[in-house]
Amino acid sequence: MQHLTVYYDGNCPLCKNTVMKWRKLDKRRRIDFVSFRDPHINKALPFKVEVLEQEMCSYSSLSQSYYWGLQTFIQVHKNIPLLHWTVPLLLMAEKLRLGDHVYRFIASKRKIQTNQGTCNDSCSIK
Image 1 (spheres, rainbow, N blue to C red):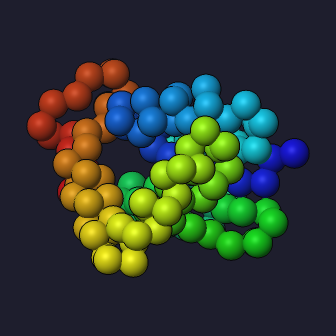
Image 2 (tube, rainbow, N blue to C red):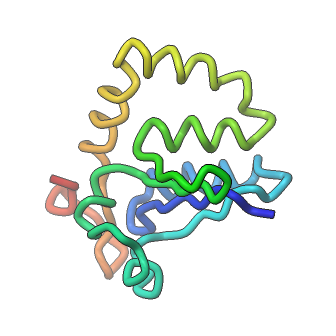
């Protein structure tokens, strides 16, 4: 039973690569990874695409809560046994307010692909 849904940018190579690695490690299939770029998905979301472009988002059906940015990473790592050892490090980074800064810095530098599948400096997230 999947109880965490992660909404990621399907036009972002970094995001797709991260999700691909998480999928391989998610042996229990607890996490559903969904691109918010899918027109059927983004119509049903209570958030605008512009908000989702800034931070990865997840929803836990157990806690009925949304999580953003670093908190999504923490939730994913809590649900993948092979990554449990990273949770205390992520929580410490969050407590020190370092984790959110690092997450936002990386997110601000990532690239997105256009419909043609190519990317250059004009397709950075602003």
